[in-house]
Picture 1 (cartoon, rainbow, N blue to C red):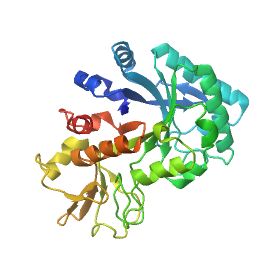
Picture 2: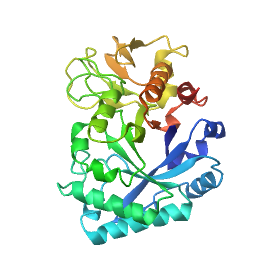
Picture 3: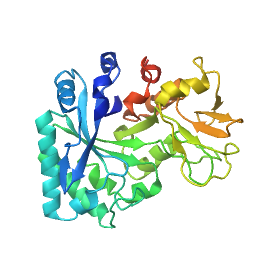
Amino acid sequence: MIIAAYLQESNVLNFRQSDKERLTHVNFAFALVKDGRGSVDHWINKEGVRKFIKEKGHLKVILSVGGWGAGGFSPAVSTAEGRELLAQTLVDINNDYGFDGIDMDWEYPCDDIADIEASSDDKVNYTLFMELLRQKLGNDKILSMAAGGMQRCVDNLELDKLMKVMNFINLMTYDMCPWDKVGYHTSLFSTEECPNSGDAVARMYETAGVKRSQLVLGAAFYARIYPNVDGLGCEVNGAPLFGEGGYTKLQTRIGMDESGYEYDEKAEAPYIYDTHTREFITFDNPRSLMEKMKYVKSTGLGGIMYWEYSHDDDKSTLLKAMTE
């Protein structure tokens, strides 16, 4: 079973060695596309990354490319020459650092929701690029992608062809909260108020032809906050705020004994509604993470991953709950 953490390169020096035994994969975020080439020139801890890979032990350490708002993909893969350049430069980085593979995190082909370049041709061009990347990377390396939890993300991918060259898909089953009303951002099961969920997204990709064993469920080690609202299901205007400070800061709201929150047992989703500040806070906690792990095991999914490693507290409370 895959148990994977996304780790921002800038946080590599804060990785707790004890967590190596709890994880199977670490995805280093992010390489970028610059002038049609794969690039890690912006990394500030390059030697730290090299040291991490050298001492990785059993871990599979993967280069993740892109991220929210990271552009350059669409024009880079629009021509055969562009695909060749991007694929080769990414493989060069993989080989130089000794990564175990590449995870593509283009958010999203054919979709400019993140204010990046997009084209209807992305659907076919992405497949051609991934086929070329597999050819250059070799069959002994991992090739995966992070995929959005929306039907249009499924529709904009040639999944039948992609899964012939990819090992698995990391489902971003977080940030699923609606922008027009208050909802959960990483619930496991659908409810009337929040129809989108981890289970719904997994079924969506399975219906499109992806084997369950090739799907990795996503978990969130951070919160989303709706300000100035009247509670679950009420109308809002825009996306909720990112909960800075991760689980450590969240503990000041829920209490160290986790008594200060509500739990939706149908959705398997914890939340807080603060009547004084009128904030609705949606997140994952030890209880919901244990339920996600049970779901992964009982349904035959390939594993579970989370964003992002540094959002856990210094005792690895969330990772321990998920794995122990």
